[in-house]
Length: 236
Ligand code: MG
Image 1: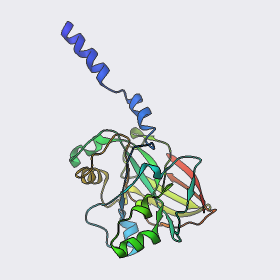
Image 2 (image 1 turned 90 degrees about the vertical axis):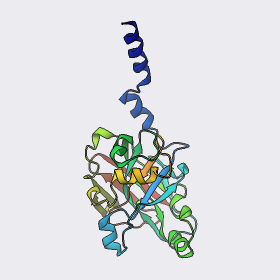
Image 3 (image 1 turned 60 degrees about the vertical axis):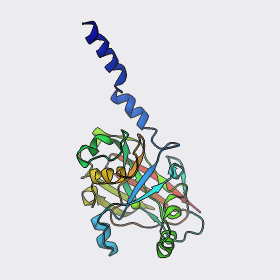
C-alpha cells in the first residue's frame, strides 16, 4: 500500500494539469520562442496566384522579436513598397519534440492562435531573384501579430475552420483551413525532422487566397471563425 501511495504522489506532482499548461501556453508570444512558417500552403491561394504549390512544406523562421500583441502597431519595414497581409491559423506547440512522426504530431499541439504573417513581398522578391534568404522580408519586427491563446478543445477540427480578414472594413480574405496543402501533422513532422519544436513555439500554417497590400494608416481586422478576432493599425 505504501508503495502505491508514494507512486501516486509522484505521478500527481509530475503531471502538469491542463489548467497549468494552458496558463503556460497563454504566454507563447514571449522571448525565446521560435516562429516557424510555411509559405504557399493553400490550394486556393496557389490557384489564384498562378504559382505551382510546393511538394514539401516551404519553411521559414521569424525570430520572437516579430511578435506583436494586442494594442501594438504594425510597422512597415524600411524600404518596403509592397506590404502584404496574410491571415493564418497559428499552432502553439504544447510539448517538445524532435523527428515527430505524423501519427503522433497532434499530441504536440497545445492550442492555437489567430495570426498574421505580415510579408514584405518586394523584399522577398528581390531576395528570391538573387538566391538570397527571405529573413528580412518575413522576419522583421512586428511581422507576426497574434491574438489570444486558444485552447485546443475550442477547435476540435483545425482542418475545417474559417479564416477571414478585412482591410478598412472591406473583406479581403475569406477562406477555410480545409484548403491547406500540407496539413498540421505533415507540417509538424516535416519541421521537426530538422528543428526541435519547443513548448510555446508557433507554427504559421499558411494563408488562404486574397492576400494583398496594405499601406500606412490602414486598419486590419481579422478572425478565426467566431472564435478569435483582432485589430491592428499599420504605421509607416
Ligand atoms: Mg504566410
